[in-house]
Image (cartoon, rainbow, N blue to C red; front, side, top):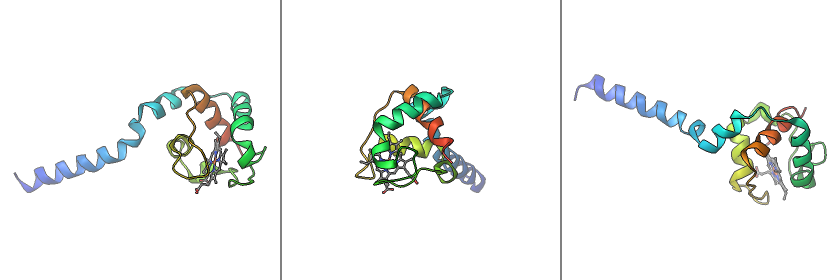
Length: 109
Ligand code: HEC
């Protein structure tokens, strides 16, 4: 194998690595919806406001104001569905509900 072949293979592996998170089928499905802020607000009030405050400005959980400035859509989705940061529970919203939540979270400022 020539050095060039090795380099090309390495570059392809690195590109694939970066693409994997966005290839998550659930994330793709969520991002295919336009999202409805009103519905997102309702879902937020029921599931999230207890910890993140009714305006998302924080309580037991951190403030979510401007969260989209430091977290990508994919990261926000994984935060909600992952259950990796207790005490925040793991949520399993339908992709449409998640899209509504996401659009709601993105406009919090
Ligand atoms: C039981 C309390 C609780 C509930 C309910 C909860 N969260 Fe959280 N959330 C937390 C805590 C605590 C953190 C901080 C986790 C950490 O980073 O260690 C967090 C972190 C987050 C973050 C990342 C914030 C950042 O600045 O990076 C997002 C986004 C988020 N929550 C969204 C939601 C959404 C949307 C819901 C409702 C579907 C929800 N949370 C429900 C407690 C909660």
